[in-house]
Length: 323
Image 1 (cartoon, rainbow, N blue to C red):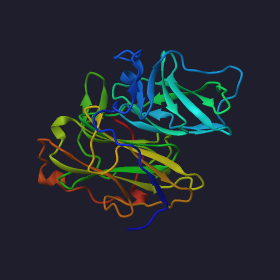
Image 2 (image 1 turned 180 degrees about the vertical axis):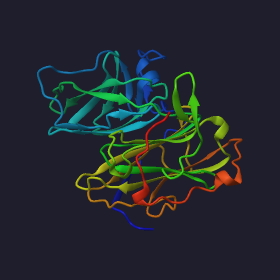
Image 3 (image 1 turned 135 degrees about the vertical axis):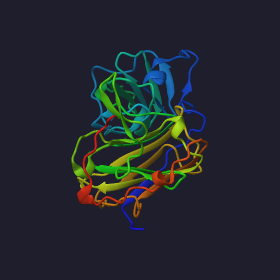
Image 4 (image 1 turned 135 degrees about the horizontal axis):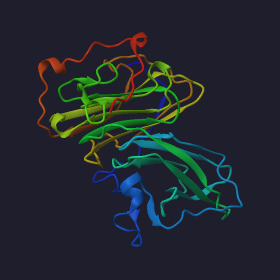
């Protein structure tokens, strides 16, 4: 396979639940707003109360985060500070709870499938000097996407064309060239929607939409029994002067899927200067990030199993969410 300049950083596996690795204190309500309606952070402690902050000191030098969020998706966050950090606090404007992380300059946010609207994230930190930073706030734009019983999502932190692939047990590859299920019309809402498959394909061929997410989902009735594979690929490195942090997650009924290969979530960095790799369903030069096994009753027809022909780089067009 063609080699690309990729550095992999594997995040911890949470088997039982999206919330399993977030320890809670006794003073936090069982039905807390932050983890049930917004997001969780692995290896963080959920606290009740106002997020710690200072009005007299400065915030971080910079914060890198994907400002578009999907229900059931994720985001990689990087904090940049000239002074070392002892603790990090992450919350949501208007919510009297926050997450506490110990000295983490980089972490993954896992968004709840119940997320239904845009919101403002808030981040502060305790510096090694004992000083609290001021509050960093950023609006995160909600992007509607299919969740289903099985959801595989990709998030990346800048405007590149990073593609997501799911190889089904039947061998069919779901990707930009074969998006999966049929499109139907909802007479109540007056909108078209895809019943399953790829419903978010961002920055196709460097036609930048800035969503920086990809999403493939399956309602229970379309899940097959057998092994699923998840791959990603830098189809077009629209700005090779900067690296790209990407996170892939696979969830079943809102909980992270146990994997037999790779990790879930999976964090991967496409380094500065990583080449474009304009491939189709052949997966040549793509990166396999995880495998997992599902139990399902769906048996696709032979015609459906045969994926559409590979699409060349020149034929790849911008897709938009129709869910």
